Image (cartoon, rainbow, N blue to C red; front, side, top):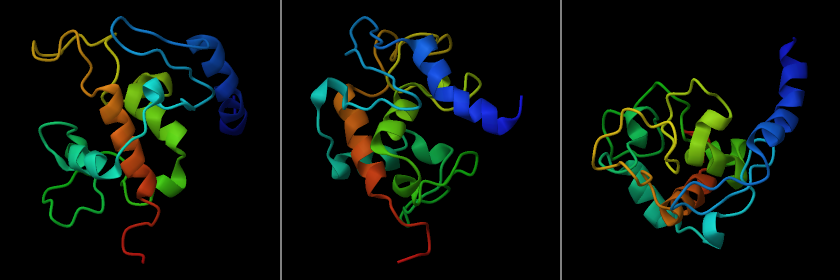
Length: 156
């Protein structure tokens, strides 16, 4: 199947495969529509400043292990994943939310952690068992921050 046709079918396939709402024990349910989770988790509004702190914190989000971004104070940024500079212009908050919650919904082979999922986490240390890496509020904080990154690196 050609890539264009496959990409056109993706939203319908995801809606069918994932169903209208997902709920894991202890987590708020969310609806996946196409390649996004349109509504904020638990109706929470995120705080961009807290989100930036999570993204830059190498003990919390670990984002900079794989991603680079507009963080001039941070050394040794990753190059395994897309640069975060301009990500708010490339993806909607709803699309960012799904990628953070559980990127496996879009790519089962992704190395991106599922930050708000408890299923399929076979190699997780005891400290994380039974709870997501980030809370619903922290997910929304990160989404709010990433949505502010509108300009590619090096542009005003």
